[in-house]
Length: 114
Ligand SMILES: *[C@@H]1O[C@H](CO)[C@@H](O)[C@H](O)[C@H]1NC(C)=O
Image (cartoon, rainbow, N blue to C red; front, side, top):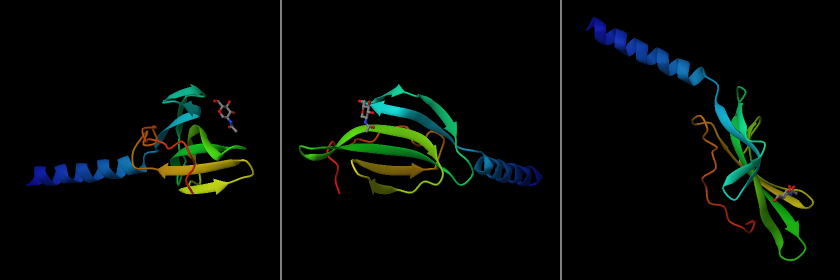
């Protein structure tokens, strides 16, 4: 019984320790066609921050907004959102569930969907 309790205690401790640990996120300034072409690395997110994936859409006179590239980064704050600027739209995805949770695997659609 004593050993079992110790085991439980250890488990609880490691859980607390794990949660207090800072998250490491994938960082990439320019992610295109499934690979990082500029600024590849990793970053450690601050407390309260998130790992982020931002899809950047650029306005083309013919046809509207089209997907241009993706940025992977540590972000604080990070909110899942779609923001519009003059000729840019940025679609953000945030996560903090595990290290490198923002590694880019999601399929993107070429045309920006409102
Ligand atoms: C769009 O992607 C190209 C690389 O394919 C990059 O050089 C350019 O800066 C990007 N445009 C914007 C507005 O970020």
